[in-house]
Length: 323
Image (cartoon, rainbow, N blue to C red):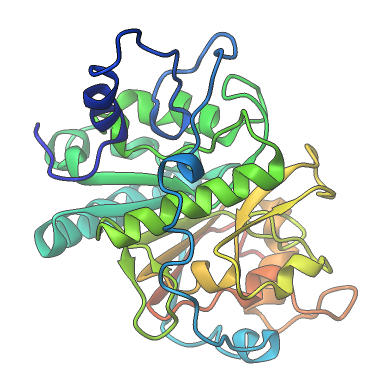
């Protein structure tokens, strides 16, 4: 299907046709294939769209205490008897939002995470959703990513490709993976430049209240320690409120080098689904939703998820067992 949205490969193919010798280029930000080996050259979004990185400067943000106090606003909790029931409901929820935003704005911007989330999306690749969703309007991003090659076992891209993306006809140019040829600092800066270009071209909406990108749907998981994205308990990155994308070199969970969206971007989303199955998450769920307290008496990272839109928790009975 044709799409009016920006496509980097098609643009560069026009440019490269004017050259007498075509350069070797890779487009890790727009590729649905897992490369078997590193390519000779990698062109970053920062190089292509230099000058857009200062578009839409962020507005002043709420402090961490204020953010944590908002977790009960526009929030819904859904508890299912099994992970299978959770997956069925999540597929309908996602498909309904896809239809809503494609009709409303002609695009659907979806942010994925790693972990158990991808398995929970498996119903989307089955009837009736695989045939009824307009996949050509989807634009897919990652809330965090490990800075490893795309064919590495730790890659969130590989996890999503193997379990979801390879089974649906999303346009390759609408899948925005990180440039893993860059350093962790460079990859974070490059991904932010990508987002700012897509805001400028109106693929991604902008939050009028916050001045940060407003994704249509953010699909988040949560770790047993209550972390979301690559925002871990007690880490200084919890307080980052200026950057859209930042990096971490000392992740307490391997691998250590990652990029991650910041809270201002996460909390500017129109819809957030926190997808949390499994008994290993029960303590953190209780702390976040049941009034418990974390061991170090600090707010869990998940408790700072407070979107200006709607937050929905998807829990199975094991995860909710202590509520």
